[in-house]
Length: 160
Image (cartoon, rainbow, N blue to C red; front, side, top):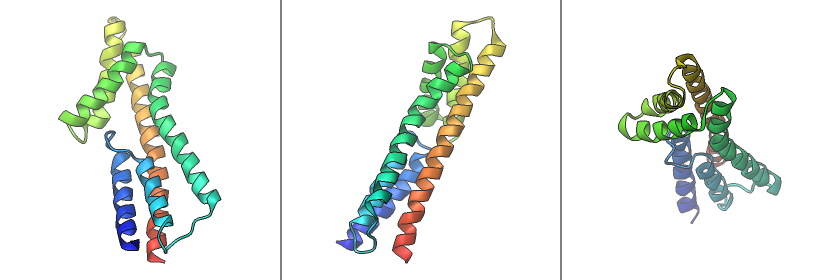
């Protein structure tokens, strides 16, 4: 059973790392599952505090990943259409132009959404698109840090 759980934990970590870049896959939640799977093997016995800490960090990072694009787009003066455009751009970019579409899609979607709201203000639309892009970078960075650390703990536990 330990071998099955260990292989499953490694797969969860790989899916989690990929999920930091591909929105259709769960990033940190998959890594958290990997932490719990390796905890249930004979290799590691993490403390309850360790498991609670990573569960809380996963929850915070996941919520921030959904909240940051809306907040940053609005913070940079974007309209509701810009926020919707960033979301649609992310989804379309992911499917039609991977992997660059994940980066370009939200930027272009926010820009076009803001242009449709305020057709005369290209500077504002560009500023809003930059906010959407900054949110993407921040969210992806947070997910990568969180998932990378959890993957590190799983691998370190297996090797040790």
